[in-house]
Image (cartoon, rainbow, N blue to C red; front, side):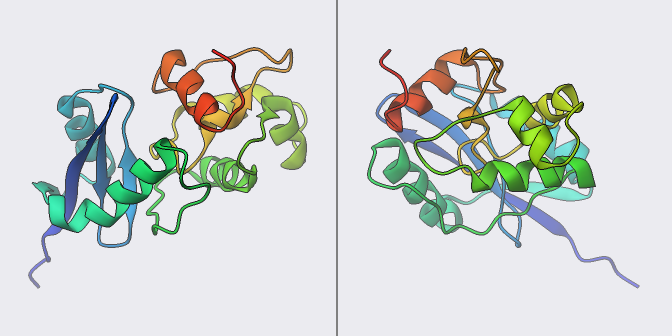
Length: 173
């Protein structure tokens, strides 16, 4: 039996001051990188999550997803319609589903997410799952802040997190 080749298609959003790699499988977007993250980071991530896949540039295939992201970053979109291909452990996927329920323009704390999962002592585990989120922006981990209301870590860097919160009018920086 011949195994069919799997492809992960990628492109780059390059609008204004934003530069982000975006990748998708046939099922949907599987990766959105951090601001100015290298192509090597995307390539290494694909090698781990999709070891049999070939990474192929396809600006045409990714165009609709890039446009949705650009509209969001310009403040013209509050939600996304793009399909997602979320790869992670069951706990990670549960956390990421909750992140997708945080309304535009609102934040939650790690403790609130842990409580929502009915695991009130799991705030650190929630933080670890959030840090592993491969699909920045559309799985809005930037909407999670510390219990004290302060910025906390972000895979794309705190500068990117502040910029995303500013897009949603949640930061005066």
